[in-house]
Length: 384
Length: 238
Image (cartoon, rainbow over all chains, first blue to last red; front, side, top):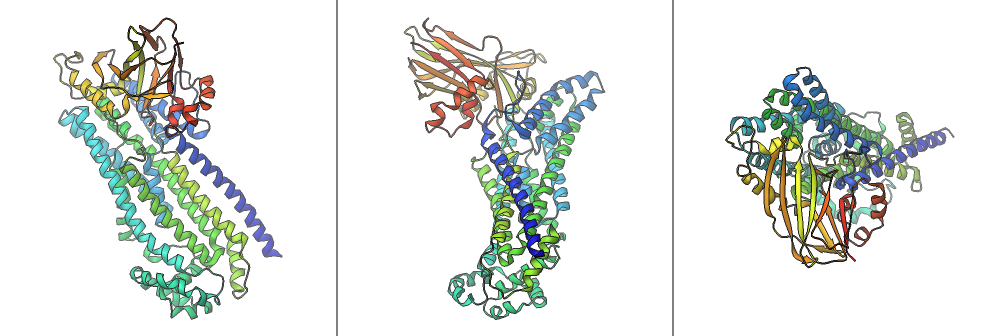
């Protein structure tokens, strides 16, 4: 009976989590739909109409943003206003959540797709936010301060960078899809756990995929083999000589989910190569500056307070990083939780996880492509 | 919970040969683990909405011809001081801080050219039918009290004489927040005396309730959700 009680408990927990997830999804969808409405704006009569936390956040961030110009003006004569400016900028950064709205989504998806650790997520978030701030300072410093270029020129530069950034994200996503697609297809081809006996029946179906395996499993061969040796289950044996790559994969899944070892595979650990992979994400996201930061910097420059603008931009970046890091950690934890929840499902669980990684990789690609071709307007550069 | 799941798993592994019916529990867990992830990502993407970087205080006039048909819209849009300063970056002037209409002419040119891409954020319907605008005319910029004001006339492609005219001003992407002036937001110029003008602000509660049932949302044109929350001018001429 005990296992039954346990599974009932697990189910209760699962239902709670599911409910929370549904609420999150609905929330996300609602807000995605409402992304095009002037809901959360602070208007003369005040109260944000978009209910809930996000509406409030939007109202707040607009409020902070609007206070910046008057605070910079005040800082010209009153030094203490600089502290207010820094505080407002920091708060704006936190509320703004991510300079380019898509930054969070890209980083979170990347982390989920790539089995990254929460710690790495935090580092990536801070690095990309810092880069974003520095790019904004560089654009305004070079274009406006050194060259005294017009807003039109500056905006043109911003637009070019924006397109490059979106293209980079799409390319980055494509690479992730390519890599993760292999794992997903392999997991798909792993026969569902049902029966070692029914395997013969499944064989014709498997056949087509077999060739595919050969293309992909090269790089994972070494570690897969190591594991198979340690975990050769009887049930797998009769398959092994037929379907090399798949059987190994299967063994590895058992190891990861039921063997109390939840650590990433050695090849996935943050080595020098792993970090290099992360730079792709930092660069793709961080190269595109936030329009708000550019406006603040130019405004500060015109007031003869460029340094205050730089300080404000860096504070915004810090605030942004904190929010992005929080979301990244949530995403990574959610994936961990998902992995544990689907752990009982034998190969099916692995299929789900590979599918999730593949899906997250696809999301990065979609985001990049959507932004690039204008289907998504996260925070477009608008030149007026 | 981790313990539980691991334990359940452990039990299962001990009985590998038992053929079990499709496990509802497992299926459900798989499903919700997916949901959980989708939720997180949706949260990430959902919060990634645009918020305004530019604030415009607008006042508009609807211009009528002597025969009672409407010929166009004259806008005066005042930008917030941060954007005004940004827009003035790099503009040469004779006197520092003073910008004449001539010195601002190239910027005004840039403005109207860029606004074209966004349909001038002005959307008109005559008796429910979409109307198009021509290129703007008589445009110029004015600099006063640290703020730039863009003036321009948006002529209709063909003058119309509808029973009901609706003009909406808003940015669907919400990069720009349009707010109409508190005083004289809308004027009718040369309109027949019988015409009645009504103006609804986006966060006017009554306007919102009314708009939700309106045909422009239900009638297939719901690609633009933001439209429901626009600044809406309605002129009824019996």
